[in-house]
Length: 170
Image (cartoon, rainbow, N blue to C red; front, top):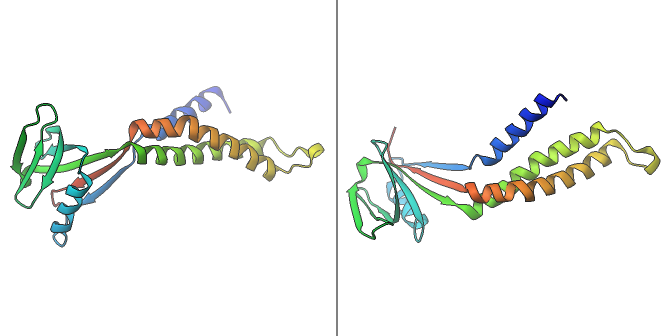
């Protein structure tokens, strides 16, 4: 593998690891009550981001959404604010613990796969009785564990995993 291809592979891996997982849920006509309850329950004790239809966004805590109005507390000054729910595009909550778990899994899969390919590519070590598959499994397990713990876990924790609730019906 040439140096430029190797560099591109490393950049691609880092981009995948740095992309936070987003789980999007959309409001439907059949579930508005449940949907609002879920948003309110998930937001208890958490800071979220409210994005208006205009694109303006801001941090909020103690978010409470009903069919008619959305209320929240401004984190900077502690003042409760209100706006019509019709003007809210979406609400996002970020979970760093869940992001760490997802990063660990993604890092393990990416680096485990690369390690397995390296092990298989190096061929059998006949003097020790190892086949290509044995070597691929062993190298993949080591690379996957190290890559998942060293890169995936901290990057996933920093980026977080995000729940996005879209309130606009399209």
